[in-house]
Image (tube, rainbow, N blue to C red; front, side):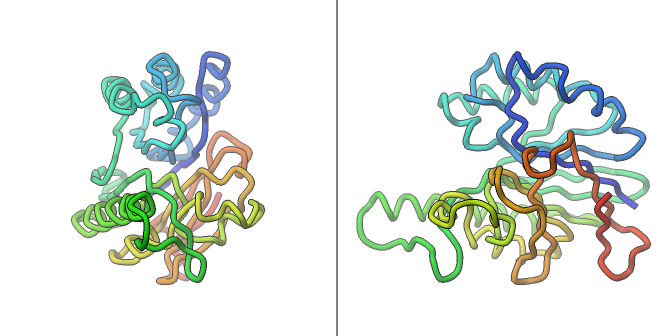
Length: 247
């Protein structure tokens, strides 16, 4: 069994220091790894990244993260990633990592993702160059995510994004902003591999549970949704019906 703790949208700044740490110190008792689904900071500054590294660094379990839109706000995303990597966190963007946990290999492929919408109400690469660029960005990110997922050799495979791959986990958000919260192309990438679980954040007023068209369980782990320091999900468990248990 692999126990995965997950959260997103922690938006760390100086005033957040110490808020998550007591629960994080308990991680070895309940989880084998911590995955964070973007929006690690408020405005993507180096100082906020250092606060994030202080709060979520030096834990007794591996920590794997993707960046979110807030982490790009100051156009310092490379510097933010460097601070986090130097602090021992693994930052993914269109690539993956394999962790040895409890005698099993957990593969995690991650990407920030981007918008565009979902079946029946999505943007298309037609018309103005600005629209083509918008859709092209999502297409490129989804292609990299799919390639990363398919390229990992592991016993259990997880997709980690910030933007949502399905509309079900957006329920509670205004319909008008769905196209800016995720894209069906991310779900297509997730379904292109034997993915066991997909985790995302971004939708603060959304819902926790969804499923890709291919049947992969999707969980929105944005902190305002799960309302705790992290949720724990079990893979390769004895639950033969789903293989996924939410704790």
